[in-house]
Amino acid sequence: MDSAVSAPAAAQTGRAPDEKINWLASIPFIGVHLMCLFVLQVGARPRDVAVCLGLYVLRMWGITAGFHRYFSHRSFKTGRVFQFILAFVGTLSTQKGVLWWAAHHRHHHRYSDAEQDIHSPVQKGFWWSHAGWILCDKYGATKHDSIKDFGRFPELRLLNRFHLVPPVALAVALYFIGGFSMLVWGFFVSTTLLWHGTFTINSLSHVFGKRRYKTTDTSRNNWLLALITLGEGWHNNHHYHQNTANQGWFWWEVDLSYYSLKVLSWFGVVKDLRVPSESVKYAHLRYTPEQRAALDASTSYWSWGKKNAQAAGERVREAFHTAKDAAKDAAQAASEKLPAPAPALERT
Image 1 (tube, rainbow, N blue to C red):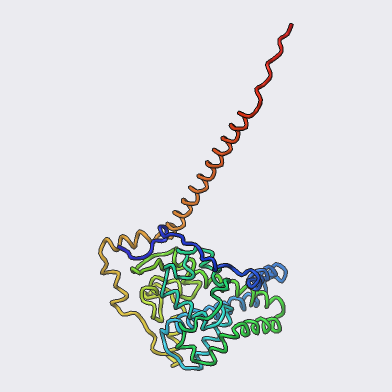
Image 2 (image 1 turned 120 degrees about the vertical axis):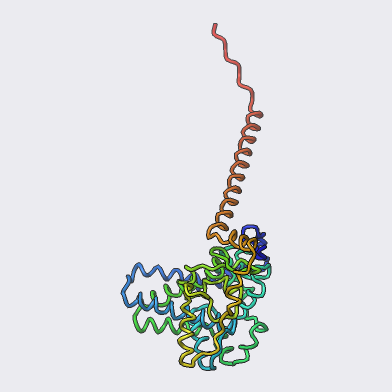
């Protein structure tokens, strides 16, 4: 049988008492979203939209190739200069510091979809896994014990500490280069899209998609998420064998981050890119029919949402009938307390 946690059947443990969103500290996060509304005023100049898309791709690459595949999983090697470039480009994404990001991601893999997983949609719901946990003070500090290998570099510690400086500098530069419209599109719109594109891997790739491999979590492969995140959507592959530079393991699994790393390896910028062995790639072919059936039963794109929607509908219907019965009882009780109607007078 598939050893993964079943998303529909998993108990929703809820959040701990100290897992609360700090709304005051979340004002900048909310403000970036609200600033996107200025597109209605500034319009959509082609060069602004081009800058928006270009910075989305560049900074997404900094997250996927840098923060994730290099700093979190060490799936390839590079020199100290390019290591800093990877960290700097990833920091431009406004997703806190490189050491903070990688340390929390390692924690996620250690406890994926278990109760200790800080952003599991199975354990704590969609919105918390998507963005809520980032806005919680409990997870604001860097877990330095989990990232000692890269924490020994002073330039990375400095960049991690002052992680807001690069994105703020980027915003200022965009304003002086292209005015307010380029600031709106190039920073606020691009950053908002980038945030939610990245966050879908935490919230959606453990819910919607297909499971090729048996894992101890609910990770799934999703081609759409792979496209918008430059290859991160092949999440079941990744959780099955996490230390590979490529997450798309077959020719039809598009992985733009890996393609770029492969090109960089031709010029010696990166080296020793780890890839899965044939035994790892084709492990699913050795599954028994029962194991395959268990995986197939959990791969429906909509089964998790459908079952939860049905459960929610049942709760709504139950609440409706409860309220209806309560209203009926109240009406009956009120009628019993009313005085009997006076007898009609007879005509003489």
